[in-house]
Each structure stands twice: as structure tokens, then as C-alpha cells.
Image 1 (cartoon, rainbow, N blue to C red):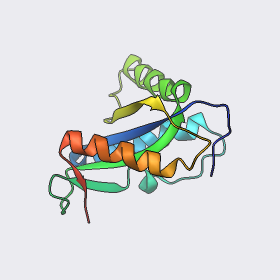
Image 2 (spheres, one colour):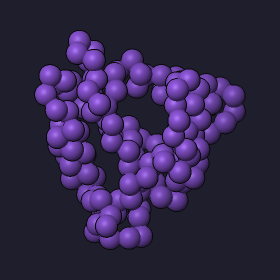
Image 3 (tube, rainbow, N blue to C red):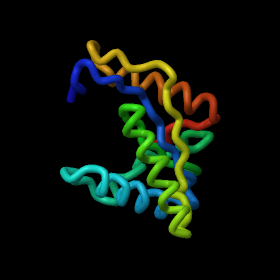
Length: 129
């Protein structure tokens, strides 16, 4: 699906540690459910790609790579602050947002893949087979 031309989208990798994946998936799902009335994914679909330093299981982390506007990504941080103000823990995820906007006049999937590759290389992680 091609995002609307004129909107500024950035690549983002959302990474959660494997030992906290259930809390990360549940928190991500709850955020998306409240943020979008048409959201239809399940908890299990959140952060579903396993990562490890060797590319083999067991996973040490999980990732979701996507595109979004900076405004939408800021809503994630606002959601995290609301949780903390209510005495609840933050959703255990880390966001890696590209500095450069995606070129939405071209196919943005290779751009997302390139961003993911650079983030994983920096973190010493690979997709687990």
C-alpha cells in the first residue's frame, strides 16, 4: 500500500527484548487499538519477527519495521507518558526512527529494508531463521 503523497513518512524499527515480548506485544496492541478505530491486528501479530546476534534461534529480541509520520510516532511517546503517570510501566520497546523522510514517490519497501538493515547492523542483530 502506497502512503498518500504529500505526507512525510519516516522508517521506524520497533524493537523489544525477548524476555519482555509478551508485555511489549500487549502494550503495542493496546496502543494501536486506541489510536486507530480500524486497527484489526491481533496481539500475536505485534513484534513478530525474531532477532538474535547469530541469526539463529532462540531470539534475543523481536522487531517490527514500518513507516509512519513523526506526529504518529510522537503519540507513542505520549501513550508511554500516560502509562507512567498512571503508575504503570512503559511498554518495553525501543524506537529507531530514520532521520531522512522516505521517498513516497518510489516504492518505499526497499527503503524500509535498508533502514532495518542499518539498525540491525548497528545493534549487532540479525533476523532469526
